Image (cartoon, rainbow, N blue to C red):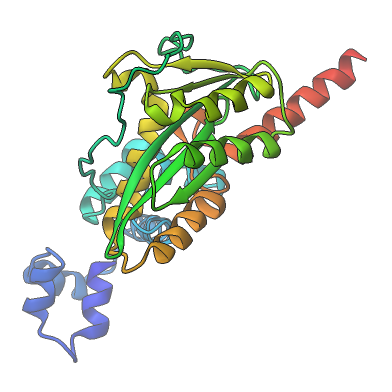
Length: 296
């Protein structure tokens, strides 16, 4: 495919320059010009086109496991190893991670809850376990804070709130959205860190009034809320660290789009056998309905 590109543009750019940029040899290019491509070469070129299309559609966010899943579901018979190999040849890789700081302030004298989750992030049904946390996004206007609530069953982000202050209203608004979205279920374990916002009377009252069970991480242990940290990591790597936001509103718009139209609906999650959260929920809901019909 790179040779084809060079052939198409050799009148506009020097062949040696294009070969250098595309990491192929000029002798290889000229040899390719005088010999017919092999069947294997044609198959690889077609696969490369499909890989590149998926890679670009997802804005460089997908590595070989997710691209392989996309190809298989589109009817392609191909191994993950081959996809990984072709991506290496195409010099394609998922966007890299960057470190980010913790926003939690757990130095307070407010009561804390027992760690009921205890690093068990498996849930076998909706509204069994929710996790919540706060992160930050830099803008030229100042920090924008994001509070989220995730259902561990599907890893769907079911509640979120954004604002310029990291306060109790931020986490209460995120939890309220989750409650409305899930139609106010009872008995859900809602896990968070020991931040003062989560220990506030307002947040604790919201939990109690809606029949939710509070769980909190051990002091200073980020692994106790690893699923939520993983989402923030993904958000930062795939979106936030690739953009410099001039205003908080620009960041809000982008984050809204990412959560609601990409992460929940489209992005394949490894915990869901590489299905998007809402797709995973619908697939399992349909399976349960079919099972109930058979039993009935």
